Amino acid sequence: MVSLSKMMLLLSLFLTTLLPSQLKGSEGGGEEGLLPSKVHVAITNFLVHDNLTVHCKDKHNDLGAHTLKAEETYTFVFRPNFFFNVTLYFCRFVWVGASHYFDIYVQDRDKCVECH
Ligand SMILES: *[C@@H]1O[C@H](CO)[C@@H](O)[C@H](O)[C@H]1NC(C)=O
Ligand SMILES: *[C@@H]1O[C@H](CO)[C@@H](O)[C@H](O)[C@H]1NC(C)=O
Image (cartoon, rainbow, N blue to C red; front, side, top):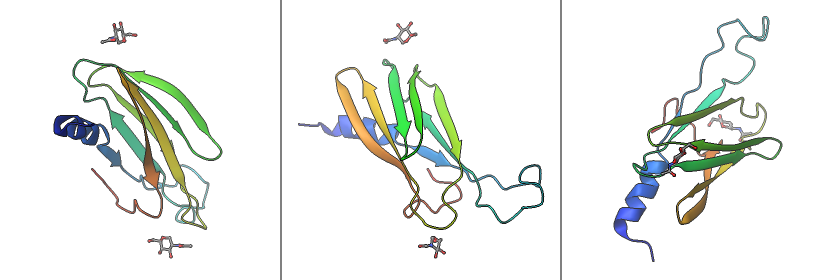
C-alpha cells in the first residue's frame, strides 16, 4: 500500500546523475580513447527529515553502507565493462520504516552522457 506521495518521494530518491568523464590522458598512459569513460553516479538524499542509508554493489565490488543526512550526496565512480554491456550496480536504500533495492546503473539501459 504505497501512497502517491510516497512514490514521488521514492522517485526523487532515485534521481541520479551519470556523468562519464573523458579520459584526458592523465590516466592510462597513452591508452586514451581505448578505455571506456568512467561513469560517475551521484545519489542525493531528498528526504527532508530522515537520514538515508545507501549500500551499493556490483558483482565484484561492495561499496559499503553510507549514511546520508538530508541534502547530502554520495558519489561513486567506476569504469563500465569495455567488451560487454553487462555492468550492473544495485543499491539498497534504507530509511525510517522502509528498505528498497534499485538497479542504479545498468550499462545496457543507461547510455546517456548525463542522466537525471
Ligand atoms: C542522522 O544522522 C546524524 C549523524 O549520525 C544524527 O546525529 C541525526 O540524529 C540523524 N538524524 C535522524 C533524523 O535520524
Ligand atoms: C554496447 O552498447 C553500445 C552502445 O549502445 C553498442 O554500440 C554496442 O554494440 C554494445 N555492445 C554489445 C556487446 O552489446
